[in-house]
Image (cartoon, rainbow, N blue to C red; front, side, top):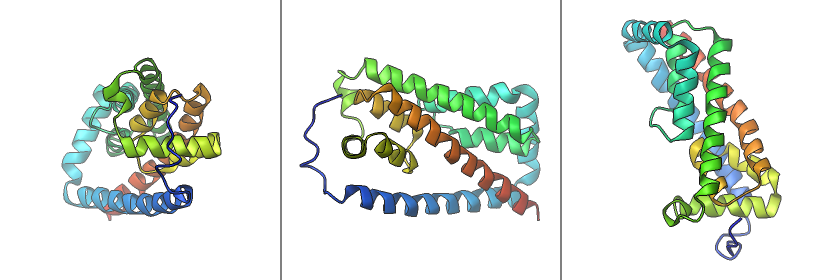
Length: 202
């Protein structure tokens, strides 16, 4: 792990501030997701259902898993929520959709973590996301794995969290914590998608 004196750079009440900020931003993000999915399902329901059925028929669970892997392994611009939405619109089994998205996402995050550990000496990667990097390091220094769990609740890309954790050369157990925290975040996102999609039908 990089030996950086970040304690002097960040306020002592960082943890509390970030926890409150995380809750606020998470709620705002979920509100936006509900509004967008409900609006799309009300205004464009028929074409979205056609797209969803084509996606499910052609790619199925491998498409959801593969897309989620790319999103969280190499930071592909379409997040796992996109594939969950396509699966829901196409009538895919919810268990299959969630299971495949979680599998792809966690494997992708593992790749991001492992590659970043190997490239930790590369200045471009080490300097990416300076504020997030310092926050993550301080949380780990002060609270260990509990701090990593807190970081996992922040509205930050899973790829960014995994890559920065690897670049900081955090223990492999840190990735395990991030992977566990990924489960409730994806489940919550999917629950919001299902509820908003169903609401749009009304």
